[in-house]
Length: 316
Image (cartoon, rainbow, N blue to C red; front, top):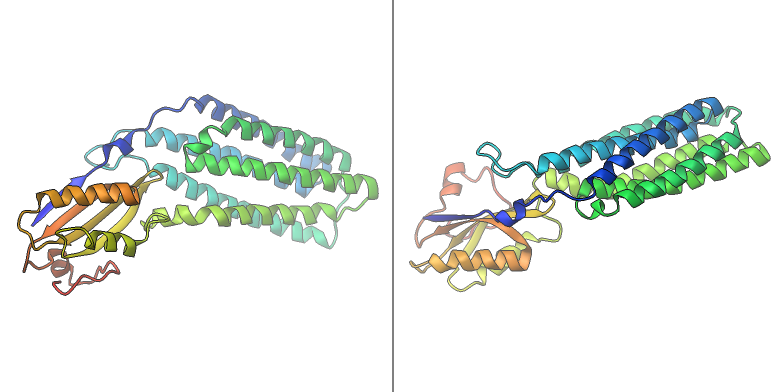
C-alpha cells in the first residue's frame, strides 16, 4: 500500500498586505462614529440612530477581529499546527456573524416595544448624525476595498459598510419624516427594517463560512465529479473513500484511495495530483494506492462507521 502527500506549499504564502494601515484607520473612524451615533441616539431618543451606531460598532469589532485573524493566519505551520493558522480567519468570520445576529434580535425587540407608543424623536439631530454616518460608511468602504479581495472577513466588513451606507440613507429619510410631519412611528419601523437588512446580509454570508468550519466540500467542487474524473484516469480501477474540505479560504484539500491493477503505480499518483490541481483547484492531496486483492484498510479498521458517503466499490 502506498500513500503520498501533496502539501501545496504555495498555498501557505501569506504576504503582508499593504492596506493593513487603511484597515486600522477604518476601525478608528468607525469607533468614533459609533460613539457619536449612540450618544446622539440617546439625546434624540432615537432607536434607529442607536441601531445604526451599534451596527457600526459591530463592523468596527469585526474589522478588529478580522485584522487579528489575518495576523494569526500569517504564522508559519508547526508540528502541532501542521496546516498553519489560516482557519483563524474563518473562525473570526463566524464569530462576527453570530454577534451580528444577537445585535439584530436585540434591536428588533427594542423596536417592537416602541411601536405602540413611539416617543418623540429629535428629527434634525437624527438627520445630521445619519448624514455624517453615511460619509463615514462610504469612506470606510473605500479604505478596505483593496483588502476585501484578499480575505473573507474583510470582504464581509466591506459589504457591511456598503449596507450601512444604505441604512444611513434610510435613517436620514426617517429623520426627515419626523422633522417634517412628526411621524415618530418612522423610528421604530426603520429600526426593524435595519435589523432585517442585517439578518438578510448574514444569511447570504454565513453559509460558506459554516460549510468550511464543518469541513464540507469546497463550494463548486462536486465529490461525484471528482470521483468520476479519478476513475477515468488510465491505470485506475476504482476510486473511493474520498474526503474533500477547505483548509482555509484559499486552500482546498482532498484524500482518496485509488485501486490499481498495475503494480507499477509511481506515475499514477503524480498524474492524479496534477489532475486534481488543474481541474478542481485542489492543491493539497493525500492519495493512497491499493493493489489488486488488497482490502481497504480504513474500512476494515472503522467497520464502515465513519462512512464518507461514497461508494467504496466491490473490493471493499
